[in-house]
Image (cartoon, rainbow, N blue to C red; front, side, top):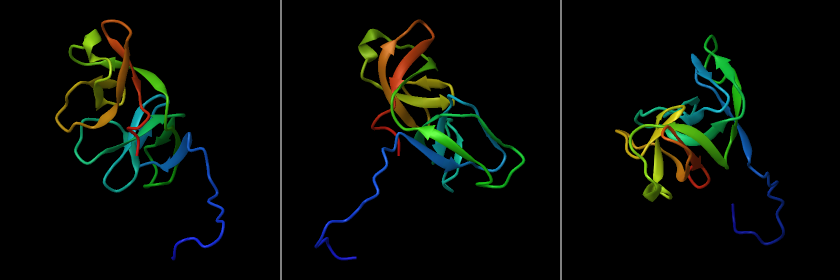
Length: 137
């Protein structure tokens, strides 16, 4: 397709919530950190190779008895969210990247380094608030 030579309607969507097809045998819980796997289907976040972080589940979806893509899950693409933290975080870690350990836990480092957000607040000894903007695909 050539460069534009007249106005073009791009059908813009805000992109705050996007629906993804869910992997077969996967259950997504509302509020979970979620990724797409190497086949492009939505799965709960984990410290697993070849996952790409896409956001936070807006709703719970059970596709444990369905085929790939039999159900879709709406995913929030930006904002700040509270998750359990693994390992030591200090006030000096504000601005550090958070990596997925599970769909409800983040750490400063992990084996596969699936980045899910930026630490914006330490809430207590167990939880951090992360901002996911700029980390979703």
